[in-house]
Length: 303
Image (cartoon, rainbow, N blue to C red; front, side, top):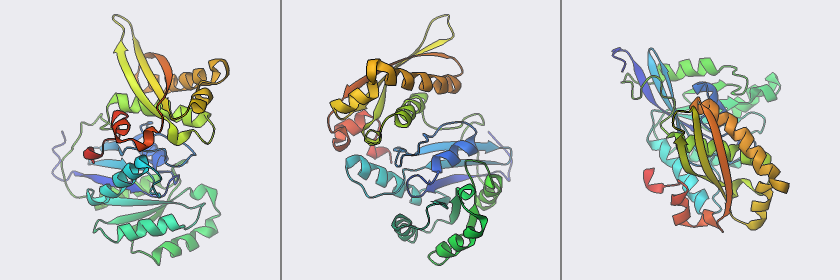
C-alpha cells in the first residue's frame, strides 16, 4: 500500500446515455479490456469498477449502464445501478457523444445531476467524428443547462486528451489511501470478466434482436493438473428458440466463431491457454423474472 502523505484517491462514476463510449474510455484508461464494448446500446448491465493506480494516486472508475427508459425488470435494475452511483462517488463524469448532439436523454440526466452535490465533469467524447468548428456550439448547449466543474473534449477511441482529463481528475480528488493493490485493475472476479468477454462476442456477431436477450453463465473454470491449460465451460442464455438457432448458427458455425473470438480475449486476460466449451440454453422471458436475474448475476441488493 502507498504511504505517500499527499497520495490522492477517489471514486469516479462514468454516466451518460447508451453508446456514448463509456466502456471504451474505461478500457483505454485501465489499459486492458474489462468492460464490454459494442456498437449496440445498453450492453453494460452491472457497474464495472476499473482501478488506475499511479505513484501519487489511485482512481477507481465505475462504468454504469447507459441511462434509458426501462422496458423490463432488467432495465429497471440497470437504471437503479446507474442512478445509485451518483450519490456514492467523489466525482461524476457525464459523458456525451459529440456526433449525436443533445437529446432528451441528456436532459433527463442533467435533471438527475441537479439532485446531487457531487462535482460533475462534462466529457464530450468522439470528437474525432465531428468538425472541430462544431465543438464550440456543443459546449455552449450544455453550459446553458448546468454549471460543470470542467468541460473536456476527448476521443476515447484514439486517446486524444485522455491524459489531460486524468490530470484534471487527480487534481480534484481528495487525499486518501490506496484502496486496491497496485496490480489490481478491477474489483470484479475473473468469472464475471470471462462471461462478459463471451457476451461481447455474441453481441458483435448476432443480429439486432439478440443483444438484450443474451446472458452468459460460467458453469466451471478449472486448471488442468501439470498443464498450462484452463478449461472454461459456459452457457449462453437466450429467451426464444429462434434466438438459440441464431446463436448456434448453421452447422454450429456461429457458436464456433463466438467461442474462437472469446477464447483469444480470455487467454489474454488469464495469461494461459484456454479450452472453451459453450452451450446455448433457452430461458423464456428471463429479463422479467427476478429469480433469473439473480441467477445471472444481476443482484439489486449489491447496489
